Image 1 (cartoon, rainbow, N blue to C red):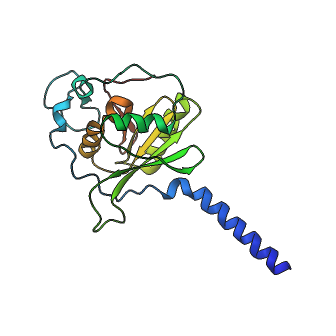
Image 2 (cartoon, rainbow, N blue to C red):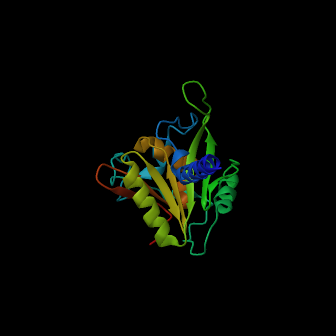
Length: 204
């Protein structure tokens, strides 16, 4: 009987540990981004002063309003859910069904057209649902600092989206293609801090 109780206890502990790790095990740094990202994404970028041909250095460019034609850019204050992001993406022509990882944490898997050399044919973004905008801003900032240079993300109201590590250019191509730079505030992790990319959509 004692041995059986010990085995049951071990199984419960293993299950609890697996659940605790679920939030960080689903998103990886070494993934392929979609192969159809626009190569001319920089036409939607400008210098901070509005001039052409910006440098892709952090703090040296912003997203132009032309990237967001037809999209409501008013700041959102009411609570959002994963379904709000799914509906926005569907309006941009991509249908993604959110996958629940745990309470208030979802995966959004964007097809990337690859399978050889990579464990799966999608680029996974983590969408965390927080209690309020301040908590979402802190969650994204802390996540970027924890993961390090090259990781990036987007926040809108009480949602914080974390995206896998990539170059600044590829991150912006992704954000422009799927209009994430119009849907929320983009941030990118540098060596020393997480930098906000100015754009048409802004929140305090």
